[in-house]
Image: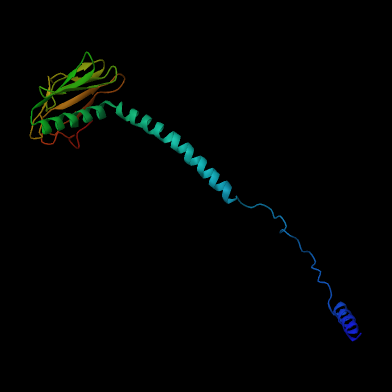
Length: 191
């Protein structure tokens, strides 16, 4: 019986000394607080959408901007000069550049290989003497009259000394000068 008394005594002691622990205001999740920002998932989704839209739009905008820049007659002329000079240097031959007024295109050839570049409608190119000379009043604008039939590029990288006048509808004539040693635009020349 002694063991029964000990067990009863022990259970009574434990019942009196151990009090149940009750936590006040204990919850399984924290209280919802007001949203002050975006979650990481939302930010990543927005960035992914921006990248997707940019990926779709940038090539189209880039080609549109390049097409607008390529339509500028002076840019087209300088691109043609570079191509004709390169052909003269690599082929070690004289290359002649002419403007075909009927077809509105620049044509260049070294006698074996011919190339061409079309200009916008209404645009005209004139090769002029290197010095300023005789002007006539044509349609209310001063226009040069001393034309040269062609521009030659030589195998050593030089070209004929001349000026180029680009005439566009509704725009004043644009005169460009070529440096005969480098076939590059003359700096400081009025355009």
